[in-house]
Length: 95
Image (cartoon, rainbow, N blue to C red; front, side, top):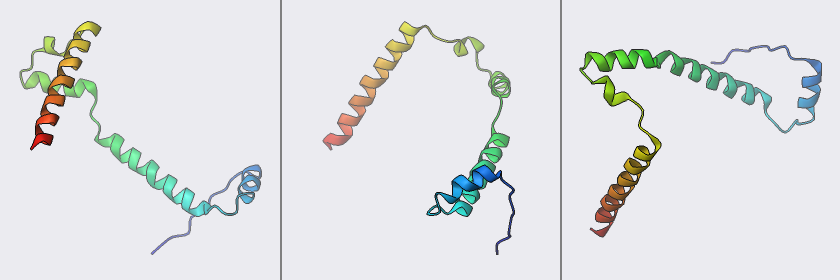
C-alpha cells in the first residue's frame, strides 16, 4: 500500500523539471528519501573513535600500538603485505 506525499518546490525548479518530462520525478524523490533514511540509520550504528579506543583499552590493548607509523615504515609494511598477498594468490591459482 502506498501513501501520497506532497512536496512544495520553487516554481523555477518545477519549470526545469518540466523540461525533462522523460524522468520519473516521483521515483527520484522516493529513492532520495530512502537513501537519506539509510544514511541516518547507519549513522546511528556508528561508534565514535573515543568509544572504540575505550573498548580497546578495556580489552588490554597497549595504546602505543595505536600510534601512527612514519611514512617509511608504512611503505615498508605495505610492500611486505603486497608480496605476501601475491605469493598467496599465486599459490591458489597453481592448484
